[in-house]
Amino acid sequence: MGKISTKTELELIKECKKGIRKSQKEFYDLYSPKLFLLCLRYSNDRTLAEDILQDAFIKIFINLHKYRGDGSFEGWMRRITVNAAIECLRRNKRAAYIPFDEEPILVCDQPSALENLFEKDLINKTCKLSAGYKEVFDLYAIEGYSHKEISIKLKITESTSKSQYSRAKSALRDMVV
Image 1 (tube, rainbow, N blue to C red):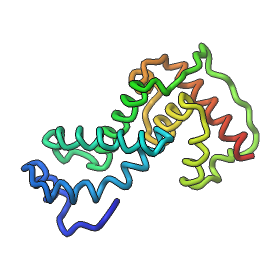
Image 2: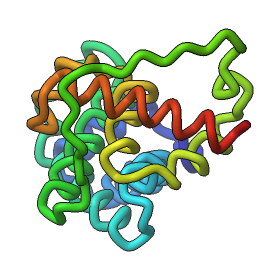
Image 3: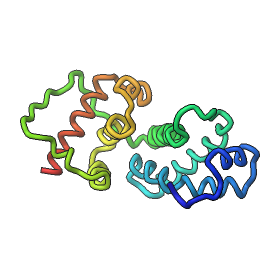
Image 4: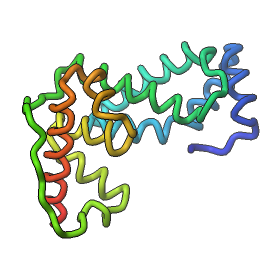
């Protein structure tokens, strides 16, 4: 992720749990670059992304004792970071959702232009989406949440999540073509 550490991930986690400041700094330096990009993807604003990252790391350090080694540690941290981003956006009321009762049907016989984008290009394109479209797109397409999970997290209906995702894909196609 970030700088190369001489310690294993588990050693670093153990030392952080013990409150060793040097290890906590090393931990932060190691993981913050990638998590910052995740925060930036949700906020579209560098200052807000830094705030989200700070909140996420506070939660990571507070809850580090809860990580038991089941599954990916990076995945565990990403979930905390995504939740911190959603909370922050909700507090700042940046996500404006357009309610839609039915999922629009998109008919497209051509291969998706989205398939040809590199990750960096995709992130740059998603930054141009409206806040509601972007948030649902990121949670579904990039983070792998289901529409049901998104509806619970964002306090919207499942059909709104589906329509926001569909509209985001359509907007991205228009940007690419």
